[in-house]
Image (tube, rainbow, N blue to C red; front, side):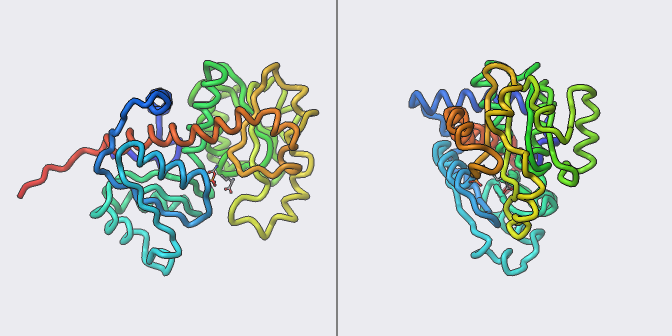
Length: 310
Ligand code: CP
Ligand code: NVA
């Protein structure tokens, strides 16, 4: 069974296949070519955190594929009142064809996959955001015509976005550099993953050092969902970790800027840089739709249909 629990689980070939399918589905949607690959299939979408892009793009994407998206807020599900995820997984597996979940703990996503019998797609956890990074890679390839050999740079928090970007960039032949303040680095095993790519991977504390000769710069909020109470401490820690015009002077000519959104202008990115790269950033947002449609097709059509005996 094919899941998307985290990007590490997908090989380079699987990632590239998904990006190619995403390009094709985008073309088909733009040209009015029918692509109802998931006719009659139902996607349950569990949200334990807020969302604009993930919810709308999965909901619209599933509809465009001929399927039915079912929005399941944790406020209404029994999971929000303590029903174990192991039981939720086994029950939902009998009603629907796949689950997309946005939650806090990565272990909850892994448990759904372990106990359920349908594909599970990670729509963001504290640990990673694989759907976003597939859309980011799709966007970079769309603007630059390739991924191999380009340099990706991330400025800011060693968070869910950065964890998935490290895997996505290095697996697709890009090099990766980042600047994070001390104490806000990614987890050790992600650093080990990066180090296994030798000099294609670098993490420093100086933003300008990281951004030197970059082809694409990314950043993300200083305080992620669930970290609101630490906002003041984080604002102090991340001071200077901003994508601004000064930082962009050391990047390669034509360097892109991407942001998963929502963006906090004046914090991790200036309004000027954001607006100068708005075409790239909003194409990136749109590509959530196309990349996730590809993920849905890859996961749901990969499911081996069990033989049904009367
Ligand atoms: N980038 C992203 O995942 O946006 P939402 O939180 O709005 O889904
Ligand atoms: N790091 C952010 C990403 C939002 C899409 C968060 O987890 O809130």
